Structure formats: C-alpha cells, structure tokens
Image 1 (cartoon, rainbow, N blue to C red):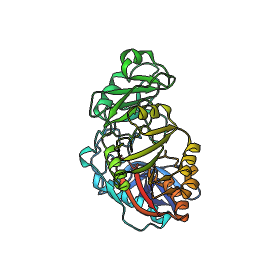
Image 2: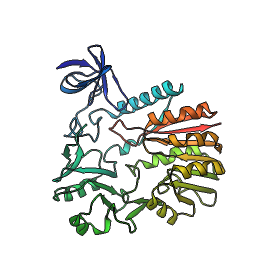
Image 3: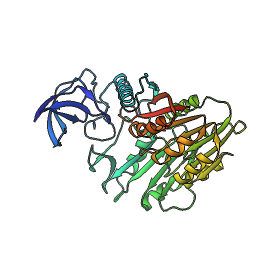
Image 4: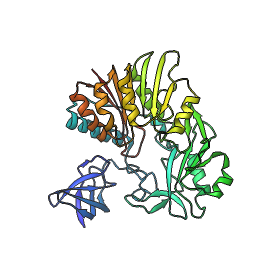
Amino acid sequence: MARVEITSIANGGYGIGRYNGKVIFIPFSYPGDIVEVSISYEKKNYIWGNIQEIVTPSKFRISPLCPYMGICGGCMWGCVDYTSQIMWKKSLVESTFQNFLNYLHEINISIDETSIYNYRTRVKLHSNGKTLGFYKFHSHDVVEVSKCILLHEKIIKITNEIKNIPRLAEIILTVNPFGEESLIYTNIKIQTIKNKYKEIYNYKNDFASRKYFLVDGVPIVNGSFSQNSLILNKLLINKVREYLNCKNGKVLDLYCGSGNLTINLPSSSFEITGVDIDPFAIELARKYSSFDYKVGSELLMKKIILDSNWDAIILDPPREGAKNLIEALKLACTKKIIYVSCNYITQCRDLKPLLMGGWKLEKVSIVDLFPHTPHIETVVLLTR
C-alpha cells in the first residue's frame, strides 16, 4: 500500500501523483485527493495504482451519481461536479495543443447543461453469456447495469427486458430520443431477440436492407456509426456549421457516415460530395438527399481531394485519425479544412504536418458530447 496525493489530471482522465520518485496514474482519483493505493504494475518511468481508501477527498468530489462508480468502466467522472469536468477538459486540450502545436489561445467549449444525464442514445453492451452490461474498468468482466446516469431511459428499459436471455451476444442498442424507434444489432443471430424485436433487429450477416430511423432528416442505421448522443449531436453540427460559415459552396465530407454533418445543408445552395466505407450508411444518405454520397475507402478519399477545387473539406475520422489523408490534404485546393475528432491526440499528430505545409490553425473548440467521462470531442478550423 502507498499513500499518494493527487495533483493533476492526465489525458484519459486519470489522476496523477508521485510515488518513489515516479509518476503514478490512478483511475477514479482527482486533484486534491489523498489516497491509499495498491500498485497494479510498475514500469521504468511510471506506475499504475488502484484506490483502496480515500484518506482525504478532493474538494471536486460530489456524492457518486451511480452505485457502480469505481467499478464500471462506463464513466470515470460520475462523482465530480460538472464545472470541474469542463475546466479539466479545457485544460487538457489547451496544454496538448500548446505542447504539440504551439497553439497558445484559449479554447472554448460548447455544452448543454440541460442534457448531461441520460444523454447516451447509442451504446455497446457486453455479455458474459448470462447477462448484459459494461466491462469492469480495465477488464473484460461484465458489470450488470440496471440503471445508469449516462444511458437514455429507453436503452435501460430494453436492456432490462433482454439482459437475461441465455448465451446472449454483445449488442449495440440505439434509440430515438425524439420518437418511438429503437434498434438492436448483434454479431450473431439470436432467435429469441428476433422473435420479440423483429421490427428493430439486425445481426451482422443480414445482407438485406438494414433497419433505420430518421432524426432531423439524418438516417440512423442499425449497425452503422452514429454519435453516442443524438441529443447532444446538435452541439457538434452547430459548431461545424459555424466554422463552415457560408451560405453556399462546394463541400467535401470525408468519413461522412449517413451524412450527419452535411445532409441537412440546403441542396439549392450547396454541392456536397461525401465518402464513407459503410455501404449501408451511404445507401440511406443517398435515399434521403440529392447529394453525391459515395462508398469508398481512404484511397478514394485521397483521389477526390485532389481531383477538384473545394470551398471546404470536412473530415470526421475514427479515433485512429486521418494519417493516410494528410499528404493529400496538404495539397488540397480548398479554402478551409474542418477536422472533427474524438481523439485530440491523434488529431494533433495529423495537424502538425498540415501546419508545416502552410495551413494555419485558425480555431479550436471542444464539444462536450460525453459528460461525466474524460472523452473529448474537438473541432478545428484550418485556413491558408
């Protein structure tokens, strides 16, 4: 056992202290905590520990909002006041952009304080063959979750109805917070679910049309990517539109999914080309718009970047970033690039060669799509 004072927060949301001359990372700890910890493992330059006892609680702590806090890996900041969460997210992004890119400006953050609970409308639930839940923090042990401060009430209702089906598979649940629709997606065919939820169920080998519903004209496709919160998604769309800042133009939308960021732009004013590798999402984006949405990998994206002039290029890649597109983006004939990311570390990695290639980092914003967790969505505007 070791006694540690937590002095700051690391990328990923872990508390940081020092022990035996080394940095120690401790999940579910916060600046100001004094904690007794057990050592999980030790490396040459750092240590990982787990809280055994909170000797002196941080001033930032509040009563846990969930009985699973400290066990479930669904959220790490469910016993921290929201004002502090925002402060830490700003600080983490500002210091990272300063250290990686020498960006010295204050970074603003868009929030919706009316929707910081039960905001998740899409979730992946894991199975141990007996029940559904989240993984225990840093393990594959399943923690059964009968209620959750993050999950929309419709997800909780469906989970409680199906969680005890024998040999249950991993499931993705998506619900419409503004309507009655729900979707269930699994890796394997489960007859019990199919019988009960026939109208909303798909499994990955369903090659017929996918189930879907619409939110503000955007198809939300079963088994395809959508934002974790269709409630907070409006914050992201508004920020992208703010950075787009034009009433018409020719826009390239990369990793576009089913058109979340562009499908609602007026077709009389905008010429949109979108590219995504998901054929189901693209099929429905085409169905509900007159824009030119295409199925294609990063190879097609690179070709299209260089084949035409664009008023703006928008990209929203997966967590791994857009490393394979950077050389093409350096040469792109466009007025601006709007880069959306759920991983600001890989985003900074991608931005560095663009800045060295003549692009200017004009604006950086955080959009808080993940209250009570250390996950951070960022939107940057590049110009030259």
